[in-house]
Length: 359
Image (cartoon, rainbow, N blue to C red; front, side):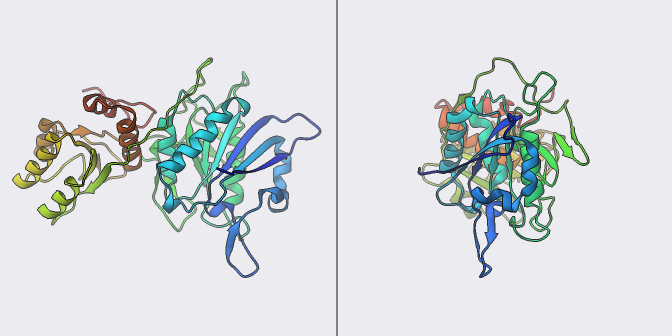
C-alpha cells in the first residue's frame, strides 16, 4: 500500500520526550471543511496551523496515512491487518502508537488489534471525534492531544505507562476490547461497562494503575493476523421465526455464530429452536453466547432458559462485549484448526477481554 508519511518534531532543538507513530485510517477527526462546505482529509503537514498547542508537547511524531481514508462503516479484517502490520513493522522504533479511526467500528478494530498484538508492551491508543477538526466546538483537538499525552506517558522507571490497546474519547481512556459505542450525538461516545476506566484527563491525568496491564521487561511482540470471516451474529427477539434462525445457521461455509441472548444468557426453549442450534453444532458450527445487555455477564444454567444451552455445549461469553466476541471468534477460527481448541480459547481471557470468575 502506498502510504503517505509526514514527520513532525515539536521538541527541536531539545530531544523529544517520546517518539510516537500516528496511523491515520480515516474518520471524522482527520477531516476538515473545504470552502464549499464539503469534507476532505486533513493535511497533517499543516498540523501546526490547526493545532498550535502541539508545539508544547516536545514529541517526535511520524504520521502514516492510508492512501484513501476509510469510512469506518467500510472497515474489514483486511484493514485490521494493515494497521497491525504497520505497528509490527515499526514496533521497535517508536515509544507508542496513536490510531485515528472512525467511531462507528472503532470498538471492533480496537478489539481485533488486542488479539493480534500478543505480547504488546507499549501503548496503542485509538481515538477519533464526533466533529471534524476545523469545526467550532469540535472534540477532535482534545481527543488527539490527550491521546498523544497518554501515549507518551512513562512510569518512574521510564517505561511506558500504558501497555495495551485502548480507546481515548472525551477525556476517558478505556480498554479497547471492553469498549462499546453507545452514543452517536454526544461527545461521550464510548463506554466500558464491565471494566473500570484506565485513566481520566482533567486538570491532570489520573491513571487507574490497578486496572492497567503492567509493563513486563523483556516481553516480545508476537504479531498474528489471520481472521476467518465465516461468522454470523444472531440477535434474539420476541417473535423469532424458525425460518430466520435456519436462514442464518444454514449460511454456506458458516463456522461460528455469536448468539445475542437475553439477560444473563437466556434463550428460547422452543423445541424447534433448540434442535436448530443442536443441528448446527453437530455440523461443526461453534455457538458463542453473548448477552444483549451492555453490562453484566452470561451465566448459563442460572435460569432454565439457559440451562439447555449449557448442556448442549454452547460456549459462554461471560462478560465479553459483542465487538470483542465477533473479533475473537474470527481471530481464533483463523488461527486454530481444532474446533475444540477454539472453544477452549473462547472461554479463556486472552487479551483482557473477559473477567474469569470462580465456578
